[in-house]
Length: 475
Image 1 (cartoon, helix red, strand yellow):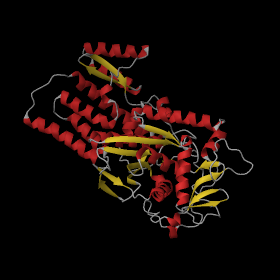
Image 2 (cartoon, one colour):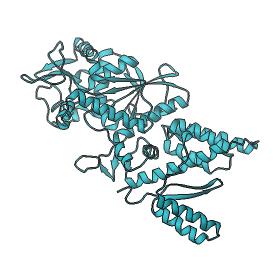
Image 3 (cartoon, rainbow, N blue to C red):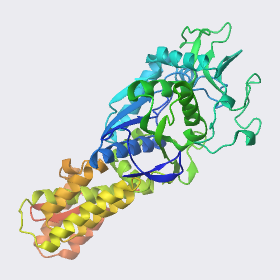
Image 4 (cartoon, rainbow, N blue to C red):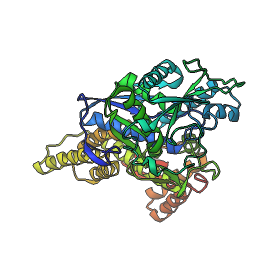
């Protein structure tokens, strides 16, 4: 199996520390607001990674954090805690806010058939571990105190730029918004933030340095090492985590333990844009999985859409693109349903046996080549269109779906419960076909298609399913 490693900037042969076991840490959500489709692309990508590891014979252990404290609104360790700010926006206390959006996050991942992590760990449940890690850094001389907190001195850590490639002496003053004038280096980052005098935060804890709360970066180091060890195999995140969050994780972790590398393979997912633009609240284009279901679209169509673009390439989301993905998923699931009904096993020629083995090998090669899911999906469609027996098509696609996660093997008939007026049209069409009036029958088929329904004539009768979307459906 080969993965692109952000640390080395190349695709590498994946070799875990203790095969077949693989430790995977995924940066989880900051639960101060709704998780949107851009977030979900990353977590479907993590799910694909874990499914692929299992498919090729590894035994992955996935740990994911929930950031419910310490993530400030500025990368320069200034501004409000996002949780405190979110609580004000939504009119909740921070604990209820965290519960609300943690649930919304997992509702979204469940709808997308993302398997739950083996371990989910909250930052607020691991304050003692974070304090202990800061104390280790303090003993080793990597910290200093300012009026607003305890900071990590990046100038004392050799190789701070190895993940991002960002040279310390080329950083411009103010590049990360406003800075703390007491910081010794612009890249220094907060390990522990003090509660300002006269202020009472909803989330604060005592510490050896004063009452306050942990910085954002320290939680991932302390929790990943607690559950996966001081060195582990894979760390995932969005590409926006590379220059700051993950760079700081490496620095504080390797400084504290003296073990290099902290993580062997760094896997980063690209962004999702909307209609060619960056997702932002000001453009009113932040959509959630709930927005997808409100339009009557199966969330697995969104998962299918994610699979059509490589995880390291930007995916442009449009409702038209999602409509096409839905049609693709429906055609694929309907094909699997038809193959499932044909259970007749045939004696295969050497040529067809060879073809079946070739499809399996091609699929294995695709997913093992830096998770090339677009190619793997193309191979699945080649299987659908091939001349191998239906039973073997079904077996192959069910096997491939252990990676796709589209629930192809659990598909049911797509027959719709129609309004009475449409049901009459279907019966009228059947009567016309029986009478040999195929022109009239086709006019009714076209009318139903305009209304968003597709007619399928099968040996067991006429079946109707939702097909091409109407403008009303996707408006």
